[in-house]
Image 1 (cartoon, one colour):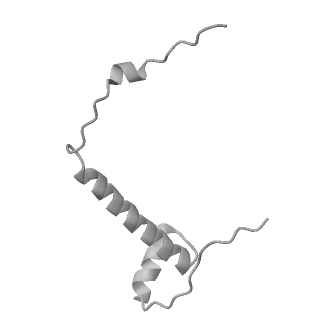
Image 2: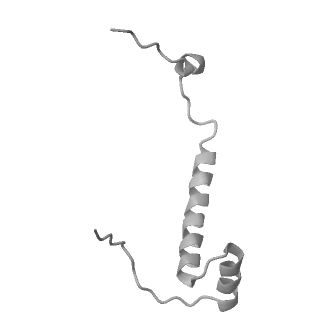
Image 3: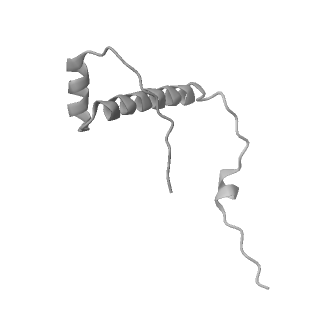
Amino acid sequence: MRITLNRMRITLDLPADLLEEARQAVGLRSKTDTVVLALRELLRGRRIDELKSLLGKVRLDVDLPKSRRRQRRQSA
């Protein structure tokens, strides 16, 4: 079984000291893993901000007590 990930080789001009500080801060061995983690965290933060912006704007007509009650199974 072989799993192929969608990867791209790219050349970046990054400040070496910044990349090294980030790599050590998160405890990763490779520069690639450090950059990938940073990109994922950036996107995660943006998604969280988008969700926060919806606070108070979405109305859900849900009866919480009723939705939390389990329906009893009927015996055959």
